[in-house]
Length: 548
Image (cartoon, rainbow, N blue to C red):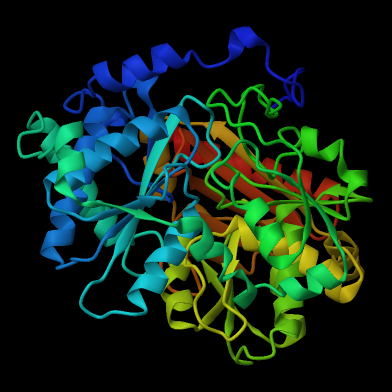
């Protein structure tokens, strides 16, 4: 994909999302579920996402999804409060109010941010887990209304189970099936309250998410080390849900934190255009992060996060924005060495499409690696029970255990990954990029690439059905193929695609669970030329499947 000529620049006013048009579409457009599959409810790796303008995320969707979740809770005897959060996308506020109307009408207690405001994804996970740690009979779950880093016109909703993290496929399949049945039945069976009935119900419980989360951070991050080292931290919230958390963090722990942009605007006009010329609040993109990168020399460590704070972007003063895979490798090595209370046989998790550098680092430490399919839901069980120390995704999302080896969150946490970068610098005296360069010197230089290609639903289905029989050759880019995977070695779960590896390279192909694209991931430990050869042969294989 060619880089857009305006990538890294602010969007012209004329290209910003038309908020009145978007909100009108949310309430008036109706999904044509009988004839348009793309307008049905579909849970990908991070919930149901879409745009009101395309009739793929509208009030009818939220009415159906939340009614289905209310029925699921009842069937599973989940009687505790539901922790409900929202990010700063325009559609999130509307969907939040729709969700409140359905849950209260179904008799569900709902905990929302005290005095209104936004609630990040990891904060919901943390709240669910700390609540359920204290009870066996009043279990809670959570919902975050967010499309993560998606463009301003998008909306999203994801359901977190009683274990705090993304609900597993069995649950989301049931919810999606029931929601689509409600949509096909013109929403007969959906209960909802008016604004007055919501207020009179007494079921909405204000909750101080900010202090509940902030006051517990010292149990997962060495905040004292950061304070003692006087690390200067720059933060760009990117207009996201964590905007009101950084000042309380700085005040409680005595940290030197500067929020470089405190603006919230649902058009996200202050976020530079991504590589394709669209506004996308992707803190792993050097184009979207241009605002913070220009200020990198003002701080020892600078960090950015996406709107719901389940992703992190780490900016080092000398080198700029770190590659997400590189930071995962450094974080794992540091935590393995500086979390003395963690069991030595504990697992470190990576997705199949994350860098092979992680494999080499974990093996070099003599630790256990667990390789899973794409989606943070695959880490939930291990982190919940304390057998998985760290779970990371190549898309700049990760979380890890408390210092004592117990669960912190079972969803991605951009706060702790950002603060960990400051801890690493404070404790080692070296920033994460410097430590990564030492890993490269020891384990080799990886060349990594991801390609997104537009795809229809039918094409995505074909790619999701790839198997070992699609690979007939014995060599890939001049090396002998050593493995062809359709299931993850860490847990035996289906990849929903294919991964082919040699000694010094690999590629994986899979359809996106949240966008109309398919993705090819490639990595070489030899050279850029070898990476190009991998790309050529991977594309040929995928095209062969699509042509059949």
